[in-house]
Length: 125
Image (cartoon, rainbow, N blue to C red; front, side, top):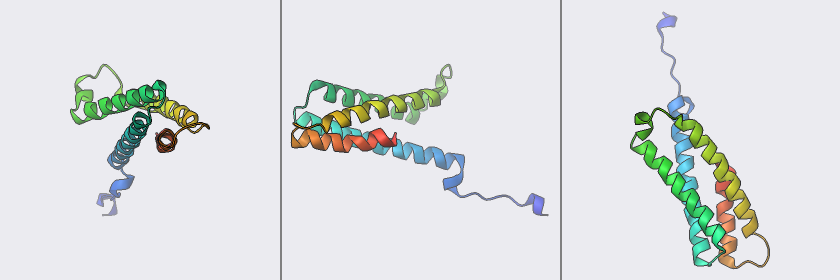
């Protein structure tokens, strides 16, 4: 009788739960990166700060759109989760570098805010 009893796992501990939590973290990192880019644009920061954060936001939106439209299932010639992980690692490295450079002395308040708001996306990706 006990062999027939189904094992119930909470949603947070299931595979689908982990995927949903990771996507939520990814979406919050997009919001933090957009905030960082906005601060860089307002403060007229050096162009590499704006270009790198803009590029990262564009790529993140591409992956979110790709998964929302289920295009990863149509294009099965690539292993999309691996590309997503590699992108996350590259994004984390770039955002950490940009955040550290923005925190150097002789910066304006908005550049400092952009560096502070960009650092969590570098550490949590």
